Image (cartoon, rainbow, N blue to C red):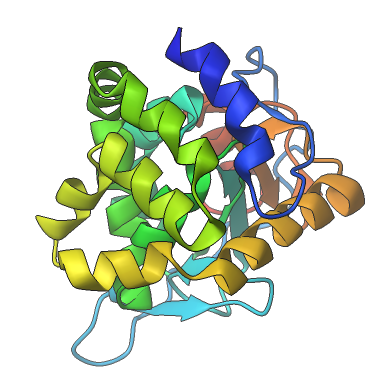
Length: 250
């Protein structure tokens, strides 16, 4: 099965990846309860919406929205994680369209490498402008099932990637999963994509950032969420939405 071989391909990463899993946690009440008044809406810069304001954070995340928002949501997500895809499908429209647009909430996505599939996918998702990254991640999560079907059809090609040198390895994985064509159809040309998937230094940095998050923040699975620096016990949209509301985004 592809899933089993994917786990084995963790060893293809440039640096050893921390052990973690894609997991859906049971529904749980948010830890906090509403205190004080609700946060006031904040107007975006002239001529923009808050969803058009994107910054790369010092930790390497991609933050959308008001950088001074009183409620800060941060997600550790993996592009190969089915539960991250499920969260994206159920949450993105309301999260970005209502919460972030109000200026009350900022959303930061930090990529987490569960396996060797996540490295080329993330290299390609971050290959263009920072403003496109979160939208590309959402689109890739919607494409994810097709990626796994493509990998299954190209099983031999996928396995052969293990024998390739690092600068070619993730390009080959991307091709086996149809990632190169997916991102090419969204503005990342084949040549540009190949240059990004051959970036060994960035691949190493992604693996190192994953290990650091796993060690320092005890990230054991994806998606994992923090609101104003506090980890949420639960990772479904109803749980995260409640936590945002309890923090003042209501």
